Amino acid sequence: MKAVFLDRDGVVVADRNYQFRISDMEILEGVPEAIISLNEAGFQVIIVSNQSGVARGYFSEKDVRKFNDYLASELKKAGARIDGMYYCPHHPTEAKVAKYRKDCDCRKPKPGMLLCAARDHNISLPKSWVVGDKDSDIGAGKAAGCRTIFVGKDQSKAADFFAKDLKDAVARILS
Image (cartoon, rainbow, N blue to C red; front, side, top):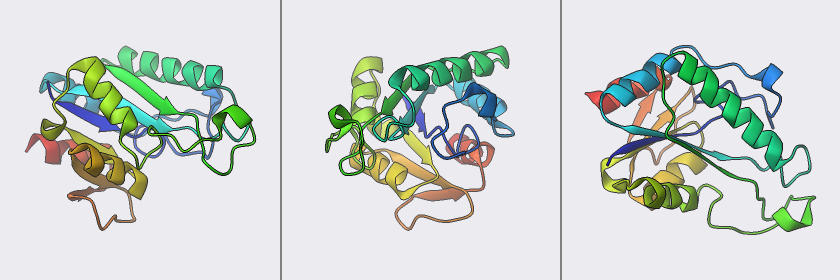
């Protein structure tokens, strides 16, 4: 099985710094259509997101799950299917909540979330892609053996490809 791993904030929804309120959610333009194209092409679509706001005490894991569930339901209403959502609540140095202060394997640029999703969903990582807007996203993709696309105005030197947004990235993946 092949997959496209998407970073959440900055790729799927507008990045609002430690976002957890549903009222602040803004699904970026073209995202539902891009995900539908991936669904129709036989890709599983998995969201992988660092959520260190949990470790910093800004919000709870319950808040992250509530936000993610709402996002998945809004995308589903538009006809787009999300096959899985994974997040890392940890931060190795800046956590104010002690139980989340750890140098884990799931915080990007480490590949733990991708490896877990690959096991859970029978995904072939060499046949898969990571789309992100930060070097840490690209680093996780590279560490997992995926092809990578960096989206946004800045450019990662490590990415395989660059795209202006998810719709552009999906066009590259499907070409």
